Length: 131
Image (cartoon, rainbow, N blue to C red; front, top):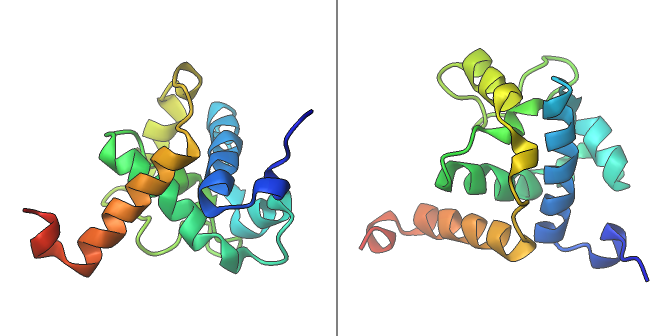
């Protein structure tokens, strides 16, 4: 019997769903607005995406992958949210477009959650986390 993301709606499972959406966008050199992405997930508003995108952002950072979340932009500005914009937004976006995302086995939800938790723990106590 098929499983549906909405039936297993943890942040890490939804992060895997967003990962799959974003690698499709990357292969087509497309971006997606926060609102459009929220609608694809069946959410009422885009404000629910920060933690889900954080899972992907931290996983990419830990594994030296291009910043996949740079493809999610504000509909008015065309820019990713604060914290997602690197030193060179255009170079980051091009790196995402050029990367062969379909050659990677997608991360499991627990891998995405672990990357997010490690980054969150570091933010709360950077000295202890670096030991």
